[in-house]
Length: 320
Ligand code: F6P
Image 1: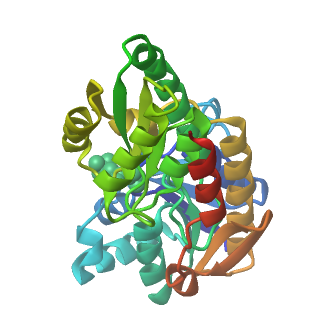
Image 2 (image 1 turned 30 degrees about the vertical axis):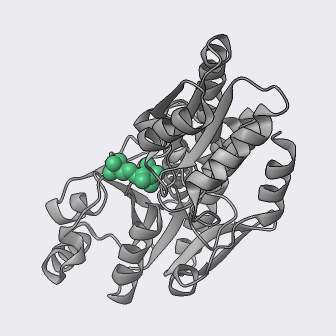
């Protein structure tokens, strides 16, 4: 392969820039031409593309967001959009693409691969919900951002003897909520993989800790559960503790990537280009049991992710 493209798609994640940098530099060092495709698949449809060289990716490793911008492109799901994207690849001589994004982005990568443009997926999302990978770029930074914000909330929650019900991102995956919940010492952690009767669970947890004379409470709720304002009201009524709610929102997606995200992104970007160099496509680079491997995209999309029940059990026992 002589010419490749790189794009970021779906929700942005800290560390995407480090992955772009690794892709561009690895490819350039091997004499390839690299095109940066702006705004994900939309850029392929609109021919919003520019050539990148090793200096184009200077001074981005420490920046959040993505220098290639991102989008969730509905037009690419239609055959017309797909054909336009393929025509753009032909026009620019793009023979393969590294797609940095979540599982929605990988479906696009699989469809392009099946139509003759080999793509390699690199998992980039704060959600850690790429089933086949133990880790996704952006997750570690996001976890630390949540922890910092909730630590600040704890100061005021403690001063006022209140309960704070906090909604955490993660789409339908509870990983961010469970892990940040443990890190902030939450009284209750509510995730879609485990809970059905949310109110009962949370109120029982608060009453249990109230008996040990605890006066302030942090409740972490995954966005896949939602309803934090209603839950706060219910807690106030049933447990007699003044309660507030907060949706942490998109601030969770920003900020300078952690060392772990930068290193992981650099490794994954490098690995993706090695595959394209061998003419291999339709694969996704993943971390499994601390090893970097690659899997067929189709298989990867069909795996089921179990929740870490041991970790949940630990959280449940120690949050008294
Ligand atoms: O996938 C990342 C994510 O931030 C999810 O946690 C959240 O559900 C979603 O994206 C929000 O999407 P948008 O930025 O389009 O509102």
